[in-house]
Amino acid sequence: MIPTAPFGRTGHDSTRTIFGAAALWGASEEEGERALALLLDYGINHIDTAASYGRSERRVGAWMPAYRDRFFLATKTNERTYDGAKAQFEHSLERLQTDHVDLLQLHNLVDEQEWEVALGPRGALEYAVEARRQGMTRFIGVTGHGVTVAAMHLRSLERFPFDSVLLPYNFPMMRNAQYAADFERLARLCGERGVAMQTIKGVTLGPWGEKHHTYGTWYEPLAEQADLDAAVHWVLGRPGIFLNTAGDLTLVPKILDAAQRLGPRPDDATMERLAKARGMAPLFT
Image 1: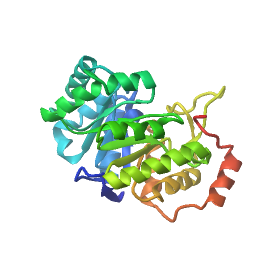
Image 2: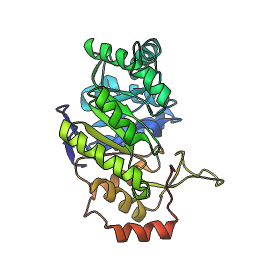
Image 3: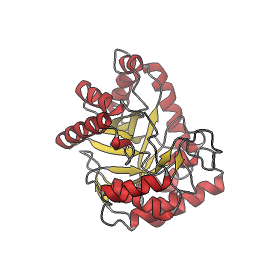
């Protein structure tokens, strides 16, 4: 079974490995049922999906009539206005076959102008607060990608007491001095305020570039079990953070296997050797 840890100040102990339901983007009903069985086998109790993840919310929704109490359920809206977020989230609840989620997140909020709209008057945040007041979500979070996301999350936390943040964390990314500094500042603030810290892109090998895409992820992932072990153990070797699984169903069992066998965190020399041997590169520059 995967170990659990307090998910920030929410009062929920989430498995340190969260199911990233982007992996269900184009999944069939049969694939969805196999994914559910896998999550139950490993004791996963936290699912992260989004309105923009293809069939994901529908596939997760098929599980909810029987398993809603089993999972901390999170989704996201990429709308920036009150009305847009309201319409999208209400549709999400229909697809998810539930009257509430545990966490509603403002999705990929890094663009300056979008940030101002979403966090301004009649913005998506205003709707999220209203949805929380009505019991349609218990908590509110913010997510993002790119090299500026940690700095933007710091700004977001100064504007509003979000319950969670989500952002990239992997060895190549943390060799970017500015990103690493911003990430560490964010981690300290999250620790002080009890903000849950979710990480994504933990098993990134690098951008696809001109290569043929052999996985459903929009980045090229590490694929060999030993390599995935090192990447997963490096992420989870840092206390207080969570790892969201990759957006490809064939990788999820390998990531969960690595997380279940969590050992000592690989040191920098070990990760440097892996990076050199596999040609690991930052996804964002």
